Length: 59
Image 1: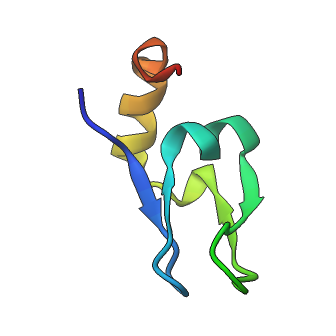
Image 2: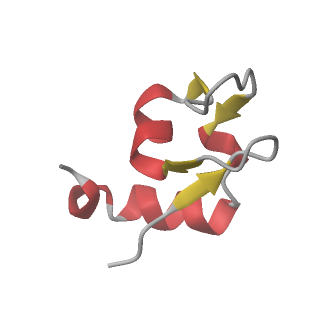
């Protein structure tokens, strides 16, 4: 299984794809970071792989 993540371009905080997929749009959880992160920010290949195997990524 591969872990899909997105790194905030402003502060470097790493966010899991399953959190992004669940919320679709979220503020970066990094301290004092106001960046908005979106599931659509993940590369297309990673989004597709995650969605095709969603059941593997449920906690």
